[in-house]
Image (cartoon, rainbow, N blue to C red; front, side, top):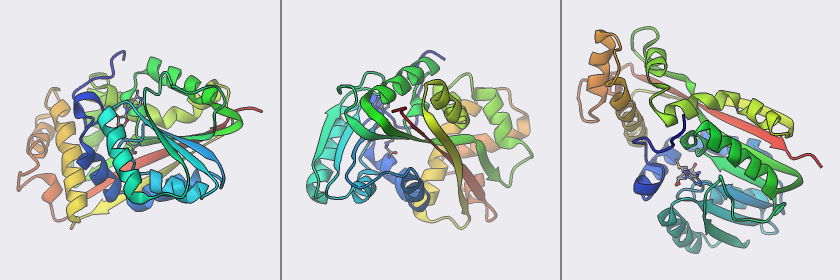
Length: 282
Ligand SMILES: C[S@@+](CC[C@H](N)C(=O)[O-])C[C@H]1O[C@@H](n2cnc3c(N)ncnc32)[C@H](O)[C@@H]1O
């Protein structure tokens, strides 16, 4: 994989202002997301960089964790997301300083050893392998010796949708992982611990949390899950998956299809979240 620009779940560039999608995703999984952010072990008084902040969904929790003696910096590639964060920060009225920057995780516009810790959520899947290597080197560069780097990413390897034929989602992943940077990146997340270890981080840990949702879905759950499956269907329909599975993907490709799997009374969806953390050696 060398390009990071496949037609995408809203992420950056031409999709970068889809704040509605980022908010939907966050609201759908808020309890699990907040638990994962807390598990990263940010400390009061720290200066934390939110790298790839999107619409700023995690900033209130980061503000809570670092407290009034802490400090936050938020960076995103898309200037429109940075503008949204600026507006929201005015409304949130955090008690600590918060700076915003436009820039890439692959070339962070900060001096060496600026931060006590770095948080990067739902961003690495947009990066090719070469870009991820650069980003992790940048994360290591901008945290202080002993500083914490925490990466949260979706783990597609544990995604399950039911009721469906055995191996339905696995067949999809096998068929599409080389045609989409994001699918490749969201499968690679299961190895983030190894990426951090190879980059020289110490005390590296990784844990997986499952987000499980059952019918009847709440409106926000339906919105997110039907959206993610409709996006996946765009790729599934480019493959030579079995006819029975293609028929399911065809219905999933339209969010409004009444007889889509998402509307089945026994529908179940499971998505994994990886949290990988490591410390820059002192
Ligand atoms: C799915 S959103 C996640 C936003 C936020 N971290 C969250 O979890 O709600 C992905 C964000 O990554 C940003 N992004 C993608 N590639 C990036 C890069 N190379 N450097 C910085 N941000 C990037 C996008 O602009 C987008 O705002």
